[in-house]
Image 1 (cartoon, rainbow, N blue to C red):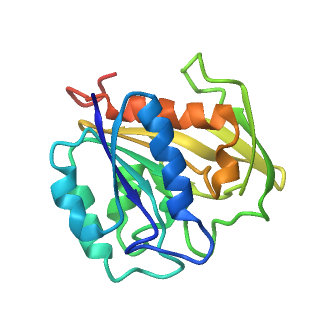
Image 2 (image 1 turned 135 degrees about the vertical axis):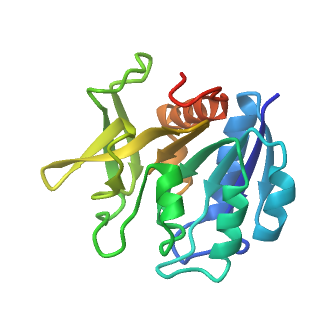
Amino acid sequence: MSRVVLFSGGGDYVDPWHPFLETSAVVADLLRAEGFSVDTVLGVDELPDRLSGADLLVVNAGGGPQAHPRDADLRAAVAGHTGGLVALHVAATLLPEDDFWEGRLGGRWVRGHSMHPERGPLRLVRAGEASTADLPPVIDTVDEAYSWLRVADETRVLYRQNHAGEPHPVVWLCERDTQRSAYSALGHDVEAYDSAAVRSLVADLAHWASAPLLAAGAR
């Protein structure tokens, strides 16, 4: 059984906009239903020990518009994790003063550039370059349409959403050295996970990211 550490907001990392404890409970339940063992962690100090031997780190947390006092400790914990990574929604904003997070994740939210319109109906369209044939061509949900995220050229985009007449990557995969990372911009609140397709997508990302890479570029 693959072991997941779910780092959730609601403890050290909180913001005024996201019900992290509620969404993390949904994510933990759906991962357990997929056969993962899930250990939810709220405090940064717990992460190094909990991550020892873990197959996957899932991050569902954000710290608000400024750098967080625990950012250096969070960075150290993530850097010491050799398994896979799945980051959800506002986790793209973490560690704003450190390039490490963007490099590990394959992209990020850029302060003063990235944005989202008001939460509402959202349609994701499978990217033409997505090679995973079993992904549904369209996913409909209710969420925030993250737009103008900065995404590295080497990422493999799975889904985009359209805002202001432009397509915006919102779900992607990244492989670097022997590590796999995946990002989904979905998950503002519990309603975002009402869609079976969204829950299935998160499970698929977790299975992919937790599978070890034996060498750079391996599949």
